[in-house]
Image (cartoon, rainbow, N blue to C red; front, side):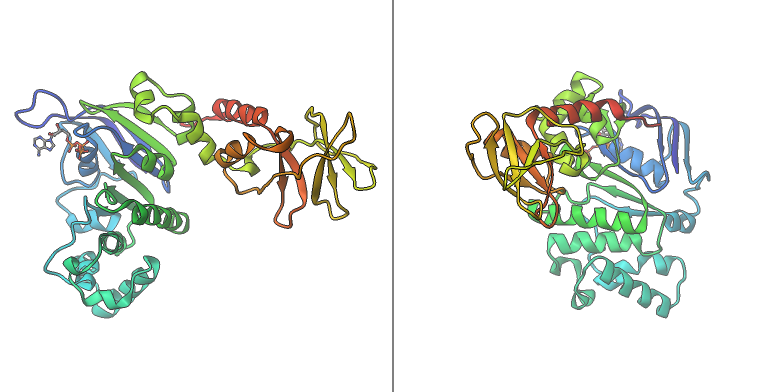
Length: 362
Ligand SMILES: Nc1ncnc2c1ncn2[C@@H]1O[C@H](COP(=O)(O)OP(=O)(O)OP(=O)(O)O)[C@@H](O)[C@H]1O
């Protein structure tokens, strides 16, 4: 756990604090993102957690311990640091870069070699890169090496200062996905600083939004921030499409099941198990419960072929499909294409309201 208590800091010669009266608790194994405009104090806070800087007032506790900046080995064992734009040592090979902290901690060659091998696998790095120098790597490869270097001594905490800022959008997207996978596997406590609200929303279990003068304006899970922005500043920061962003994060499987009127191809009604939604159409299923066609309940005329959607599809995708779906409904199907409920725009609306009211957090 990282606990920041009543932290304030004003740099000499500055008339405005870089960080103002900050109280923040980051729980173990939590992925927390810091986001805010340039100069709002994000890096300063990271440097204080990492003992590279100290607050004028207040305390920083890491894992219940007051780590001292004077004991650099103790700090490095606890905290891996990925600096802006990778910041690899230019005159050291990839292998030597990754071995930085193990060497600092006095590991022998065999142990260091073994750890490098593990990290090469973890970060999907090509072994042939190990003897290269940083300038001989792509931006994405440098990013991977920087993360491997930070993880070398297996620290419980990883601090990352805009690690993907200088990387092109396609590689950035891939590295973000890999970082989420690593986090799920290794359960590190991660604090990642970014300018990019999309990156903050995608990666963070919780997001801390700061404004100029080092003021924390909201600290909450992504859906809470999108559903209930704490101020106009946050609203402006997240932009005009908050609901679409919320739908992007939710899956079809997150929606409670609703049925329509169901019937066999012979016209026999099938008893629905779940609550039914009102529709002028019934759905015809084949003997394996796969949707065949919509049928008008009034005229019994066969209508269009149903449009289907899977449990892992996003609700944003569902929303897009619903705008043109026959009967105004999408049919939910499982991996074998069997019917398991329907989706409507009204249901998406309900889900946004329900999720918006659900959050409790400390
Ligand atoms: N060493 C320093 N000496 C004096 N002022 C500093 C120093 N480091 C940062 N500052 C000032 O403190 C404020 C916060 O800076 P900080 O780098 O923490 O912000 P940031 O949110 O990380 O910015 P960015 O997103 O641009 O990296 C800024 O006004 C900055 O100019």
